[in-house]
Length: 189
Image 1 (cartoon, helix red, strand yellow):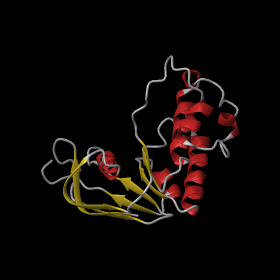
Image 2 (cartoon, rainbow, N blue to C red):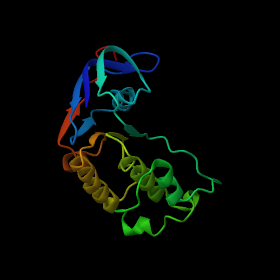
Image 3 (cartoon, rainbow, N blue to C red):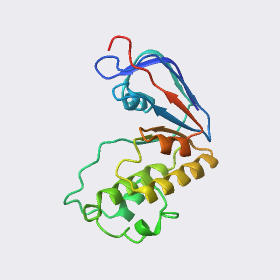
Image 4 (cartoon, rainbow, N blue to C red):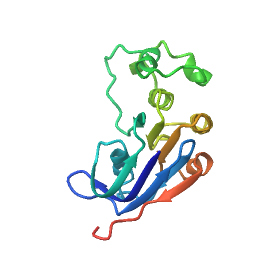
């Protein structure tokens, strides 16, 4: 599904050490490491948003990709409900936890930060995609949200979806991921 051989990624200049990485359909792989090693940058390179300076990145032809970033789009004053957000990504609300399913018709700017975050995660996770890339998905989630997210990551993987998760949450990575790739600091940093 995805293979990286000695990939060095960045924006204006390289931000990662050479990374070897592979992902098969139905697999959940965590990307961890200290701040500043380029975890989010590597995820962006997988999505075609960041530059690959060297190495080789190979994505299966025709691969449908969904990306969740740490950037939160502003929703203040935007008359968009949770149900409309899910419709935009073709994500089904089936399986949402009751504490969020009952709030789908409320405007996004009237939901709590955690509720908005989980709804955005759900929209990405359940969009029609073969590969899902998640950047710090447990930010702003309470323990119930993390448990629900973990269960649904496993469900998507059983359906054949490949998932890459960037996270500092060691307990979440241990519970959610089949294996973990630890990124190292660049030699020139």
